[in-house]
Image 1 (cartoon, rainbow, N blue to C red):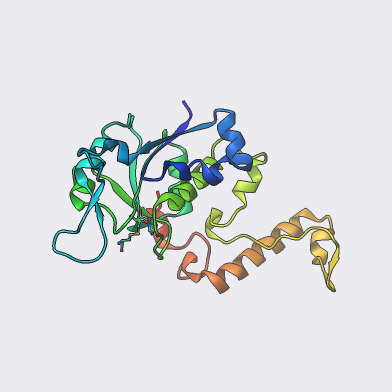
Image 2: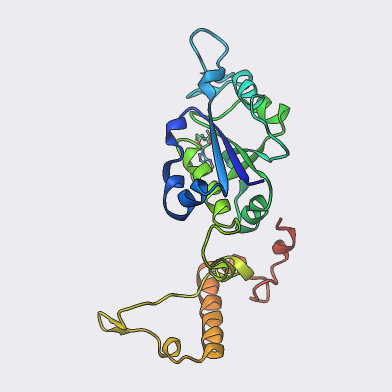
Length: 239
Ligand code: SAH
């Protein structure tokens, strides 16, 4: 059984979008994952095909209707997959969460538009809100593509070298060490000698030191109170 993403959206033409490119697109062509898009408008219940209405209590913008959303979600064969709503109010996405999603059967994802969706839909269908960061997009489509891309690249056989995943940012609780390639000298800056030494133990140690340095400078929150990777008590709750 391969990973399946089902998307509920008002803009199905946004998909596959970037998910058709490079390794992620090839993986779909090979059947390593599949994509289904449902147009929420097809589930509108009145003759005007309305999917949104003005917010109860007043205020700006429009809200997506609970009855239309429920009708569209009830059309999906959920099959034990998590049902998510991309939302700036959600729990911020982490690599740990992505990994756990990628080990499951797939995802059902609602992309919001306008001011968002009627709260009663989220409660009635036990939908989990997931954020891709503390900023506000105009719609959930880009957020959904970001989440799916992050999951699919972790599926077995999607990336060539499993090592490239094992050493990446957030693996082991650190940001990644810096990379270099040809030319040997760029605008007067050489590649650090150690990387050309052929001494693999030394290279490993240097990379770990650099990863720590970069993490300390940019994301001290990833390190625990002792400044050690993996000593952050918050890691224990990662799923
Ligand atoms: N009024 C809402 C924002 C609506 S933005 C609020 O203040 O919380 C419109 C849609 O874009 C949302 O329904 C959601 O699906 C998507 N979206 C916006 N920002 C997002 C983010 N950071 N992460 C995930 N989805 C986001």
